[in-house]
Image (tube, rainbow, N blue to C red; front, side, top):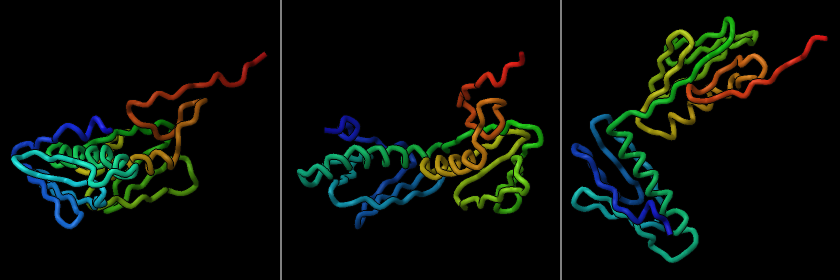
Length: 177
């Protein structure tokens, strides 16, 4: 039994939700998000509340019940307030720039790394900080993970790309006699 899905989700003002033919749509002041949900979970929308219930008494329906409720909560929160992830670049000569529709990273390779930016995300680069923001939490998290995976922080000098709230455990290195 899902504790998350048992509680109905109330819609904030200026936010609309609809569920038609397996597609859950949320419209808000910042935009619109659509996501396809399977028919194992029934979704009811009335009086600015969204209620989730398993349509069948199967293990799959019970496992999807809480997941779908969490996805819906994230979608509703995203159309009202942008999701944001901050990354920090550490290293001499390491930098990032947004050129057109690409993020260009110079992180110690012999060539710059170009990462295409999805149309619904916004990336801002200031000195050694990268900020990824958007209304879909999954896309913001995935883009942040792709950027970080380009040059993971190493434990000796801490060079690389890390999340702003991430702590890198440092190693001591070689000792001199």
